[in-house]
Image (cartoon, rainbow, N blue to C red; front, side, top):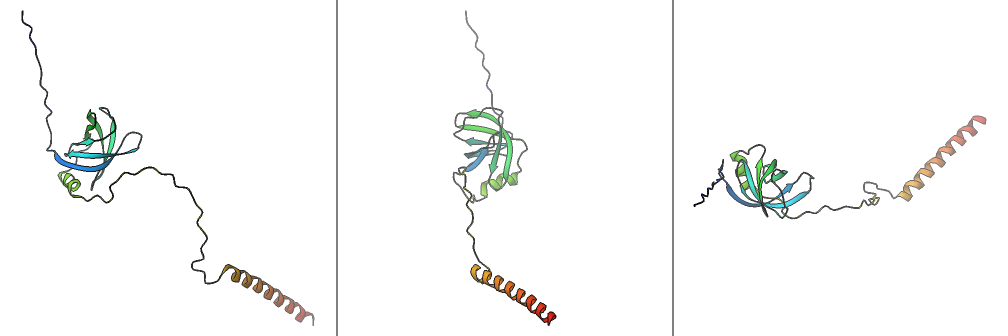
Amino acid sequence: MQAAIYGTLYTRARTSERLMLGRSSTLRTADGAPIDVVIEDLSVTGCRIRTSLQMHKGEEVVIGLPGVGTRRGHVAWSDGTEIGCEFEAPLTAAQVHETRTTETLIEGQFATLSIPVVAAPANNEGNRFSPRFRLVSIVAAAIFAWLLVAVAIWASTN
């Protein structure tokens, strides 16, 4: 007796040409936390990303594309350290080219830091006179004004 074994081959039909990229970028998941990733390849419909984060098919993501901005998408497949993302709206050929040729201004790993609020020191820029001189001037002007009032009262009584 012979057993028949049947198999089906599945091919991934690419809807657009993939461009090898190898560029650093940032990916944000549903919680909004930034994750440093590398976009390995890119097409108008999606991209392949290398990341240390475990992601699952169907997860919503926002991907930063150099020269283009951010693009919403979802995880189409996950294979350990690599994921395939499909964009919600396709890129144009010009945007794919822009991502390839745009210079990254700052590349690196950025952490969230809490910055303590420190009161700025008082500076006297723009003031030609010291605080002490201004105080003495105000007091002298007040005394002079009272003297004028006293003289006016004295003159009216004599």
